[in-house]
Length: 353
Image (cartoon, rainbow, N blue to C red; front, side, top):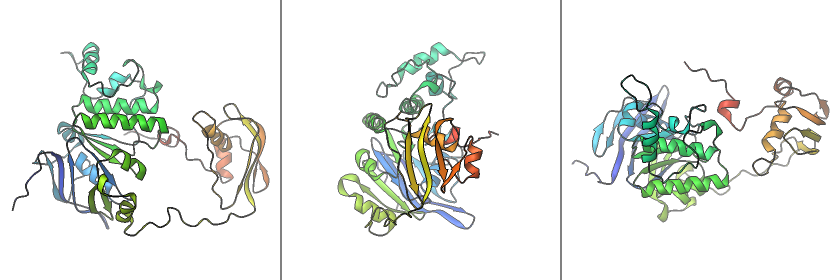
């Protein structure tokens, strides 16, 4: 018997299977997204969320299964085809060109052109004004994106999806680099998108966010769909149980007592963008948190200890011995590593082919 389609369903996958050498990444996964809803897609790392999204985006081809848009079967072979079908994908590392303006980033790849192939900037500005004002960026559209805050960059990419007339917008870990205030601003924008009839697929590991912004939740575990539930009829405990296959009794494992010996000692350290006379000890087996408001110098202190920024005063001791750290290479040689706040631009050397 043919499955009766729901008129509110924009996107649907049925029986998706994807195998990689020695591993099944997706095993008969059904998933659907409805008009005017926020649908959270969650699961542990490696569960299969990203693989499912890449199949929908046209980056991977499913070994078995079908993808439907408005009830019609589709064979999506490229990101261009998914875009033509009204799907947009916003990744955690935003795809923006920093030296281009807001308007140029919004219409990236679909610039209005004249007969000579030149960009019609007046037409681009006019088309930008036609985008629904539910997501105001708050700056002149001629402003370079490099000068925007992270939330403004997010809004720029969302407006790109609106300019493309996307109906389903996938957001992958959107709050990873946002402050609390910016998260609330993003949630307000997502609510506006939902009210406009857009469907949002929200990928996140943060359970409190899921319950604040989502309407439905689909859980994937070990390549299989465990189930789909409405937020109103479930709890975080039930979601955790679906994700883990057992009840979550402790959010964190029992804490082991740190050793008495210090592995790092910082005495009266100061830098150009840090506080003055900063001192602390870090014991072996201990996790030490550095907390503070944006601009307080947390990131700068980490860079200073790693040798990426110059230290003006103070001393650093590793395993009780005074350390000379004048560069990241010095820090690495003495067993210090840094995972930077902005991983793409500061932690990687990306070579584009």
